[in-house]
Length: 370
Ligand SMILES: Cc1cc2nc3c(=O)[nH]c(=O)nc-3n(C[C@H](O)[C@H](O)[C@H](O)COP(=O)(O)OP(=O)(O)OC[C@H]3O[C@@H](n4cnc5c(N)ncnc54)[C@H](O)[C@@H]3O)c2cc1C
Picture (cartoon, rainbow, N blue to C red):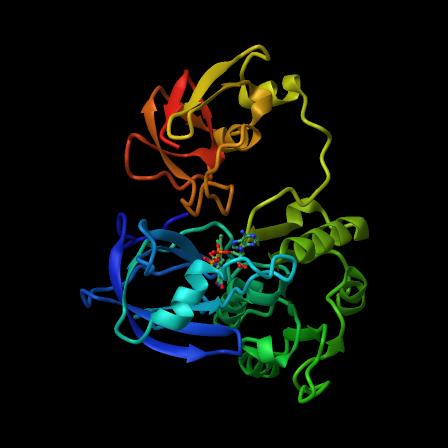
């Protein structure tokens, strides 16, 4: 979903303010360099960035949620968590883009920005109760959604349930409490898994431990709300499957991945026949895919999945993040042949010869410049 007033491709924005939200999360307020109007956004949508990171030969493409509902609409706010090397790979490089933002993006820095996009949105004026459920930096779309619902002044019941390690990493804590205190229909519940020495139960957080489906059963009256989920993959899997087990219909659960997307729900294994049927192809369909730069050729069949799946299965390296055709990290050039997308949610790249291989299959024999 894109917005009225959206622009094509990238537009120059300038950082107007930079403010810490916690020890690990910093907000950046962006205004258009041309002084023109910005496109309105739905709460939950994100912006795409093409970043010139020192020491990198090619632009780094990343996606960040607009972290407020911004009634005045003269800027966009992002809130970015600094990503360090993961505990199981302490020697890995820290996150490229998030550390670039924290260490090099200052007031006055110019950034190349794509227009607001994304379908993980809430309609503030909608009916029915809503649970905004986040872990860690997954709070950015939830905070924006909460602000939008509060501003709409509806009577729908809202629960903002958030899990984070401690107060040092907790973004938007005071703002959430102010919103909840001002609206009888809005309740907030914050869990700290490892509260710090200065963190006060009942003030900074409500429960020590992780957000669990048992906690949700205590907080919520029944299984009828719409559930919005965002957080790490283990958090999302645990919440999603806990809700399904409780009896929540999967159509009531909406979610967004910030990292590599995966299936949250166990599914029956894909067979050659079921994959072909899903794509509307004969089971014996096959095409040759050449990954030119890698010097690898492979036979694609419907059971191979996307071109990215085929690349991975054949040891071909290509960056990706969302696996949903949104973030453009896997953008590749088609040198020969034709491709087709496997679903309608893709945000297509501008060039006729460009393809998001995470969401595409070959339509003929193809040569991809990877
Ligand atoms: C729709 C959407 C919305 C998003 N919104 C937000 C948001 O509001 N706020 C936010 O902070 N983020 C958001 N993200 C996530 C964001 O886009 C980036 O993915 C995130 O900032 C990490 O990017 P990075 O370049 O810093 O890290 P990367 O360089 O991509 O690295 C990611 C992690 O991998 C580790 N790593 C690197 N190399 C290795 C290796 N060899 N072995 C093991 N580990 C390694 C890094 O240390 C790091 O921890 C969003 C993502 C999506 C898809």
